[in-house]
Image 1 (cartoon, helix red, strand yellow):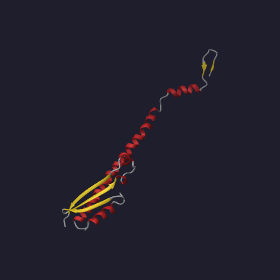
Image 2 (tube, rainbow, N blue to C red):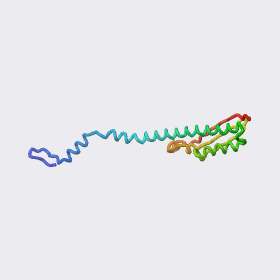
Image 3 (cartoon, rainbow, N blue to C red):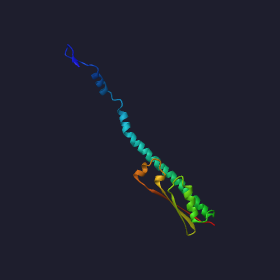
Image 4 (tube, one colour):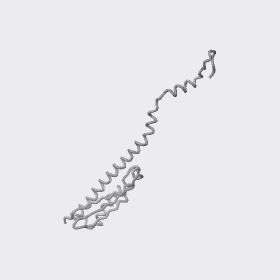
Length: 143
């Protein structure tokens, strides 16, 4: 910057650029969006994990009910066969699933334990809580 003959300071160009830069407020919403984006992504991942857990629970429940029904009509004879069928049918969904089956008062009762970590997609939900799903099904033996 330098003074002219009237005593006013002349701008070399960079002062004008700084004034224009500080006068504009475009981009302020972009900064807010960048700050909120991780929150929204985290919420979406938690919802996706919860949806996968509910879906896995539904598939596992149907598998346990089918195995109990097969024993109740005589297709499967022992509780070991019921456990093997449940675990083999769920091997792709949950390799750590554990089935326990017994006969109680004329009914076949099966408990299935699945770690929630086998069912989630992102694993964010397991960082908050690590739970095991326990599914119980009981079916009257008909034969």
